[in-house]
Amino acid sequence: MSHTDSQKRYLRKLAHNLKPLVIIGDKGLSEGVLNEIDQTLSHHELIKVRVNAADREEREAMVTAMCKGLKCTLVQRIGHIAVIYRPAETPVIRLP
Image: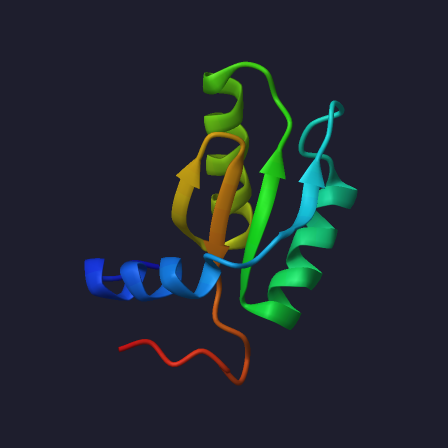
């Protein structure tokens, strides 16, 4: 799923005040964590995920695997925080 730069800017603006709803801990990206992220995305559409991995490449790999596995879009990644978006069955967020 690909979004334009203006759509990503709009999503970043919406995500600015959000708190991370899911935290990926020391055990990494397990099936249970993926299910939790999937359910949270289905309900909220736009969420922040905190990835607690010390290594930058490891964080990047987890975020990439998460987005690919859940068919969601990475809107922004700053440090340990990733903002991801996936429209719901009946979308609440209307992209410009």
